[in-house]
Image (cartoon, rainbow, N blue to C red; front, side, top):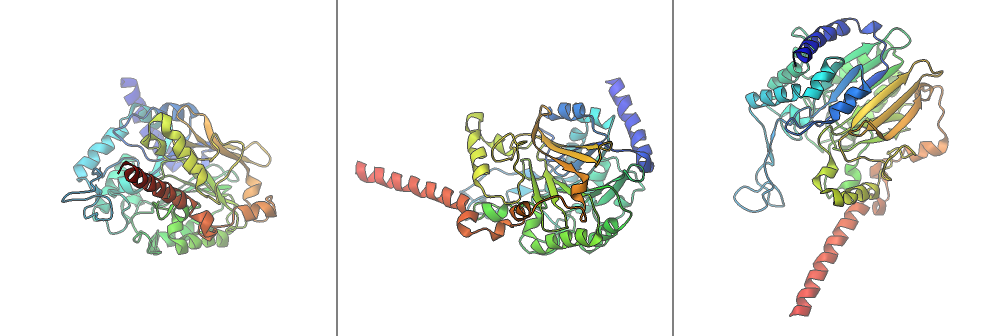
Length: 432
């Protein structure tokens, strides 16, 4: 343990040195993840450490700081259903948030990672302080300080003086630079379904300068919520998930900014949804924009059911339409989603000609569950390698699908419920 503590202290010094000497740090291995409940076992750090990343990126829900109340359908305070009159989630005190951050920071596997890798990150709703919260949340400035302390952000960092946790890093020598841009999709976000702002004016201005600034071979934009996928367009009215797709004007603005900046080599990484997938959009920037979603390190959609029934989640994932999802031979399941604990892994082969990126979502054992191999030349507006047929396949937005396709999940669920109700009535009639 003493050796481990000493290594972590040395890592703090190392991170300061790296932060001040990014220009000389050739980056070839990056890991990322999200959705880590500090109270749950976290064995996935063993696989992440085995991957041996030089940089690890937190994409939000780094802790679960708010309080989740039970489902209450009837009674004085109802947290679910058509007569809901009380919130399902409520915020914690700052002292409880700090305690949860301390628990997360001292997970043994994470301690080992901090001892050898630079750790950076942004937040999502549960570490922001409240489920689905935006700019209206009153404790955001206090919780910003707690997040930055968790990330070992220097006391004189500009992030401690600005409204929001957005930032950027640049690694590598000229010609082999990797720029990592981390967005804050909480501090300035307008209410859901308002089609208002996600980033706010100050962050938009900053992002424009970042994208129009010094070129880099690769630019990774980290967003806590999904950028390309808009599954809410096909899961509604059953349920809705947060994504840039629920703010279509903002997403169009983001795509236009990337296109107008003439910046090559851009792709997204994201979290939030408790499953992993890779999506792409071919009609925004002159080259395909990828979004690699890894969620979560502990939280996963299949864990809501016992193991023998998890095939149901996989079937529903396959049945739900998704026009943007990348489906190839690298997928473990037919849906090309993965609903168990996972992390993201990026490998850059600078010696290949052209430079090659291997981007994967990996399971708790470090094995790939979905992935893509991308030539850097593919991510250049003036050297396109994709074909017209592929363009069309990844250009149709979910909300543009024919209604019978778009709503087939809801039709299936409501049909099953209707059949169940009919059978119950039939049994009652026969017994009567």
